[in-house]
Length: 520
Image (tube, rainbow, N blue to C red):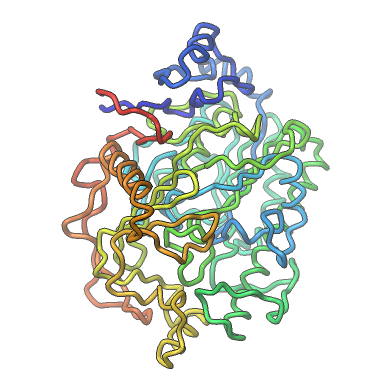
């Protein structure tokens, strides 16, 4: 089996030599300081404990509230600078701990993203790379490692990963009120008091259909600023207003959970992690490899134990598994492709990776797009440029999509609004984020940017080869037509990574852009 250059299983890369959360053997610490660019394989940073030792020390381990929301983009919280959306409880958590400014999911697709989080692996490496596919059995799951170490583990709300993960939780429910997170407080109140806990609280918000309630502020459509790639109409504004209401509702329940932790006197021994499985459910956002689809909020806080600060370091959703294990003082696994963010939690200036990768696979519509970000540039490669990159959110089902179709028929679309209808479309895209945060100006054909284009091409090539990614010969076809109607005789095709047996490959690809390949 191939072995990666960087440290797998959550061992922090040695760009950050200090390590505040787990014991680090002295000999390895000296080696790390002396050889900062080498992989310390595969010794974990946390000392290995026997099952008996783990059980005895379980009571001293910190608790975890892992709150994963549905379809929320990074920039749609107050603490990330949104001028309208009110998220006071999340703003407080961000001010007390670590806010990650550049956190990305590896796939902007619900089930795919969640399977990557629980395994710490890329979609083609965990074997459930398309929407509504189930995680195969046999994977290392960080929740199982927690359970084995004496944690009470529970999942409440949206599941979406398949039965292979069920045994890693002591308790699973779909939630008596999954949209409103109504049973979370009850679970927190009725937990076993003689065990540390890990709660995977999975909100339905802000997934469509909208569910207005009295648990959050309602927004005036007149106050909404519409992104330029959508039609600025009252229907679109109302659609966005309902979405922002759902975002604020997640904040409301975070506040209730925080109050309950305080009431029980365990707030200072509980890590709170807030993130999302993918970006907002609107045209050109969800499923797509633009920041509006892949960049998500990530706040990690343990009140009284984290020095406040914002981090510009890149973070991937596959980094959450090794991070949680390290914060719990537990070993990771060589199967994990992510790296621990614990050094960044300790020091916002620390960097554990400077390259990020995301994918767009089948999500109702056929797709195979790969994205890499290094520095201020994002590069995307489309294996099917002859096809339209379509999504349900751009169809006639939803107001913002229907408004785009109406403007197209009337011939009034702007260039930015035409993007969702492009067919054929560019095989390569290159964007410079500081000057183009919405990624509207494709620089791939500009000769002035040829050097950075070649650099990112090479990075992506290495990642594809080392992780075993592949373009299917018989890819899964569209399930619906472009208006959102179900097509007859639809069936699954070949998965990405199937041709290379990628589920058996653990190599994470380059994590630092200057990392030199070596013989494996």
